[in-house]
Image 1: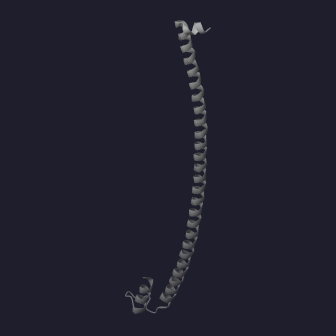
Image 2: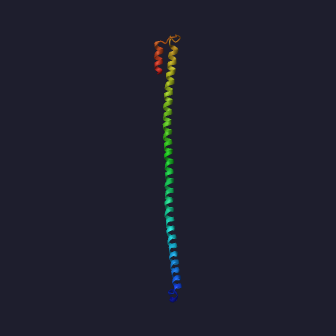
Image 3: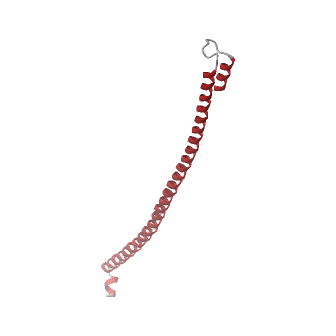
Length: 122
């Protein structure tokens, strides 16, 4: 048997067997490395997906808070505008009452009380 591996054909067979053994070892090691890399990057991708989901939730909560704050400001501004409107309506009624009581209301020219009423509107 040793004589066979010492012959030229035996050396070639031995070299081919050694080459086949090296290729098999390389394929095995390469496959294990691929499997480790696959597991590593699956973990990285899962972490990125979780971070993206958390960011989406945080953004949704931020938008809801901003919308609620805007609604509060809107309600305050509406209340302020309604108060200003009521105040203006009271002023208009008072000026209309004063204009109706003005003895010079039928004249072509504006008298001093009329000028005072006009200045109140400004």
